[in-house]
Length: 87
Image (cartoon, rainbow, N blue to C red; front, side, top):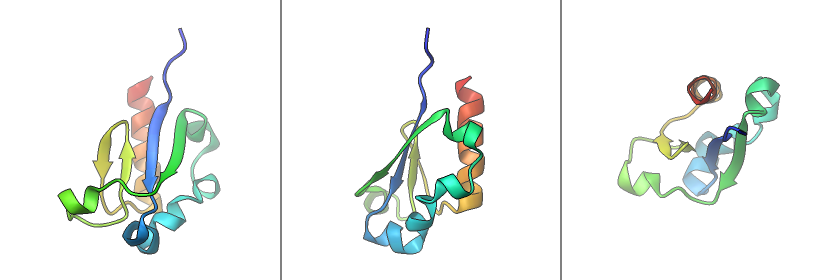
C-alpha cells in the first residue's frame, strides 16, 4: 500500500509573497531532497489565513494545518516533522 505524501501549500498571495513566501518557493535550494521526495508542494494564490488568523505572513498549510510567520528554517523543521509523523 502506497503511503500518502505530505500535502504542502505555500501562500503566495500579495502579503505572503512580499513577506517571504517567494523565498519559500525556492525550497529546492534549502530543503533536504529526501524530505522533498515525501512531500507534494505547491504554491497557492491565497490560503485566506491572514483574514482569520492575523498572526503574520507568510503562511504555509501542511496536511491541512496552517502555520504562520514561516521562515526557510521553520519550513525545513515543519516539513521534517510532518514527514516523520507521516511514516
